[in-house]
Structure formats: C-alpha cells, structure tokens
Length: 140
Image (cartoon, rainbow, N blue to C red; front, side, top):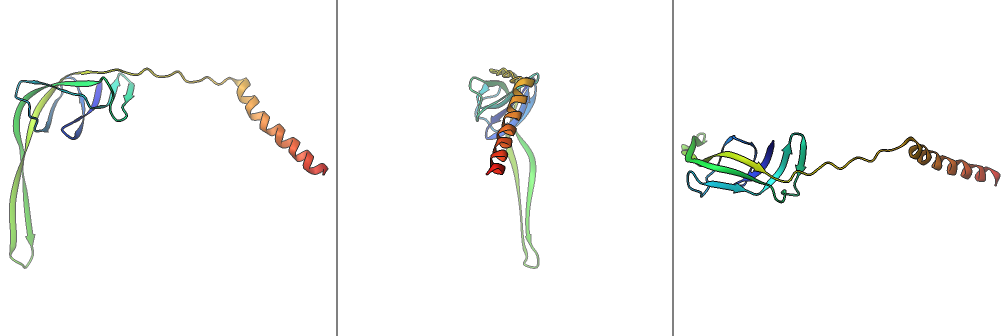
C-alpha cells in the first residue's frame, strides 16, 4: 500500500516505515503529525484518485529530527569585468518516518457486458436506413 501525499508544498510517494526528508515542519522532535492532503491511494492494485484530495484519507507520521541539508554553493561571475560573487545555502529539513496510511478505498464499478444481440442490432439498424434512403433517391 502506498500513497501520494502533499507535505509542506511538495508531493511525496510514501509507504509504511519509509523515512522522508521534507521542508522544515514546526512540530517538535518525537511528536506525531497527520497529513490530510492525500492525492492518490493504492491498496494492492485498487487505485483511488482524489479531486484534488481524497476525503477521509490521511497519512500518520512521526518527526524524528530537524537538520540541515547539504551545502549548495552559488558562484556568479562576469568575465573581463572583475565581478565574482560566492554564496552558499543549506536548506532546513525535517526527517519523518511514515507510521501508517488510512483512507477509504473506492471499489471498482463493474463494467457493462455487451451481448452479441445488442451489438448486432445497433450495427445493422443504421445500414437499413441508409439502404432505404438510397432506394428512394434512385426512384425519383
């Protein structure tokens, strides 16, 4: 079972016991958090899509720790002008572990079975009308 959920403005594919790094959350370490914006839910091949979110579905998670991401260096330069600028950035992240996915899984609607009788009647009916129309045109 997996779900696609929106957490802090980003979409993640999550399943039970998965560790995920998300943008910094305001919750304290060790606290539990619930995400209600579930966009897709898959339960062993039965897929439920939300429009835009599935009502009644949620993802339960636990905040493990707050940390910083890897350093990213931004270097700007204009050649022959003597302009160089170096800057760095470290994103604030929160590591969470998914504890469970709860939600309503929609049942598939049974497909209509077309019988041979109905399909042949529907196909033959327009042909008869066309043949009658051609005969009337030729008689005039």
